[in-house]
Structures are given as C-alpha cells and as structure tokens.
Length: 322
Ligand code: F6P
Image (cartoon, rainbow, N blue to C red; front, side):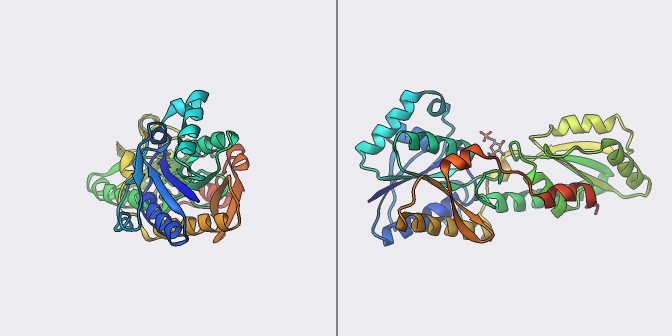
C-alpha cells in the first residue's frame, strides 16, 4: 500500500517531527511512502519528494516543514484543479493521502474524499481551532513563544511605565490569547468569544497606574480586533500609562517544537497506524482526554470547535494581574 504525505496551509511547529515519526512508522510497518512538496499545490504540480527512513533523521528539533507548504485557493475554487490532483494521485499509485494541516486543509481533504480519494487528516495549526481534537500540533510551541515574547515586553514596559497592547494570532479563535493572558499575568484580554468590559478594564488600569505599578499588559486576539484599535480605544479612556502596541506576527509559527508538540506528533503518527490497521479512512485523527479518536471528515468539517467553558469563565472570574 502506498501512502502519500503533504503538509498544507499555515505551517506549525511539530510538522517536521510528525513527518519523521510517520514516515518511519509507515516504513517499519511495510507501507510505501511518498511525499509531495507544498501541499495540494505540489500534488497539482507533481512535485514529488522522496521520504526514506534516513532522510527524515534529525527533524525532531527543527521548526517549519521540510515538505514545504502553501495556500492554494484554486484548489478550493476550481473543481478541475481538484480533479487534476485526484488524477495525479492515481497515476502515482497513491492509495491513501495523509494531510497534515489546519481547517482549510481539512476542507480540501473532504473535497478529495468526495472524489473517491482516501484521506486521513492530522490536525496541525497553532490556532487549536479544529473540531475532533483537544489539541492541534504547534499550539504548545506557539504559546511558549508568545509567553517568552510577552515576558520580554514586560521588562521594557516596566522600565517606561507603559501599557502594552499585544496582538496574537488565532484566526477566529481566542484560544491563544486567553491562554497567553493567563500564563503571563496580563491585566486584560480581548477575544472574539467574549465581550470585554472596557470601562471596568480602563478603571483597573488607571488604579494600577495610580498605585505605581509600572506596567500593564493587554492581549488581543487577531480575530477580535487589531492592537491599534484597542490602543485607540484605551487612549480615549485616560488610563494614565503611555500606550504602545506590539504585533507578534509570524514569529508565533516558528521555532524548535517543544516537548508537548513532539509527543503530540508521535501520537498522531501512531493514530494513523491504528486507523490503517483497522481499515479506517476519511477521518481526522485527534487526541481527546489522552486517547486517539477518529472523527469522520464530514463531521469535522461541519462542526466548529468552541472555546472551553473553563477558558470563557476565566475571562470573567479571574483577574490574572501580575
Ligand atoms: O492558521 C494559522 C495562522 O497562523 C493564523 O493564526 C493566522 O491568521 C494565519 O495563519 C496567517 O496566515 P498567513 O501565514 O497566510 O498570513
């Protein structure tokens, strides 16, 4: 049986370890393995990439993806592009396509499934916004990076008596923002899922300022507002502090995968083997409460992951102030 692997959509730290674990696990269990460069676009352009036991060595500690990735809107929009991708896979004798990627890549796999291509999706995205899994590959490293960046910003904020408004990624989810706020002792957070009481926040910031606390940190999820919009809002509220913004940007997607992402990569590779051994296809392989779970692609596409009640409650009930 021949298994093809692609990484697709936004990259995430942990993709390389997953390529390594999966390639070796498949080879050891008698499967033939083939990679394509640059996601669905690379299949379309027949950009094959040989994956062997030896050439995936050393990937556990490397960020990004050796297979490369891309956004390929034509694949979503044009049925003839999808038909061509299906034909390339069939010409290459591919029996199963493993797609490592986020929400958009999942939708792509579901479209291929509808054309008769057997697919397995392994959830990889820093956003942790995919249905069918508690964790997506890369979120642990991204949060560690954000935590590190905010800790550093705090040093300079304290030196200057400043409030920093820090914008983090997350697409339409507040997951990264609220977790980062908890981990860094931020004074406030803006996320799409919950309204922030701006008057109450401004009052608290003013009080901190008057008490001589030399910094305040506000985390903003990109899906809610820009750091600039929040800064303009707070500037009109007379909080005392000088205000600066920082947009963390793509630094959040890079770096050496932390332990938890390597472990998750291993589990997803083992989950793929489990699916193959049970003849289960067209599923997203996820991890829930520590167990491997399979969710049909159709269900994963049609449902949206929501922020846990714990995180939503924490926005209201817990002041993280440092
Ligand atoms: O989905 C991952 C993500 O990093 C989002 O958090 C962000 O909105 C988006 O990708 C950025 O995409 P691009 O790299 O195409 O600018």
